[in-house]
Image 1 (cartoon, rainbow, N blue to C red):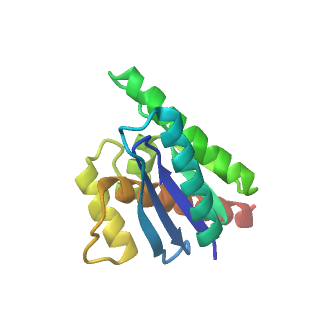
Image 2: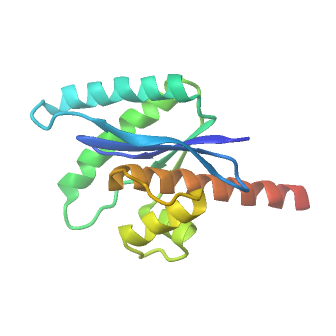
Amino acid sequence: MMRVLGIDPGTVLLGYGVVEGASDPRLVECGVLKASAKLPVERRLCNLFDGMCGLIAALHPDEVAIEEPFVGVNVRSAFMVGRAQSLAILAAARSGLPVSYYSPAEVKRQVSGYGRGDKGQVRTMVMLQLGLKDLDQTMDATDALAVALCHLQLRAVERRLSVER
């Protein structure tokens, strides 16, 4: 049974979600790693990196899936998210874990069937797919779960296609 750590990168709040099992996915854990916005960015990144390494050690994922930054109007924000993405990549690489990357539209399309859905739709579909009546978490954690579910679903398709060949 594959266990995936999904990451919604951020330099103040970094969302994480762990799910396992492709055909009937199950929530293992989700939440956010927090770094004080008052700290210089290098201290925040260091704290988040340490937190990521701790999550990987405690939760034992098989693979890591990371949402890519959305580059819209605010390019500076996308660069900051890219920094957080890099620390997640390094933490996974340090543990020898494979990493996959998904655009926000790809995650939305895979999880909710529509690549331009809003966060509320994604949250609802995450809850449905995991059989949850309530999800008392931030949107960062919900988005991370969506990334993990996207990865699990695409891996299941890849396995089916390889069996058919």
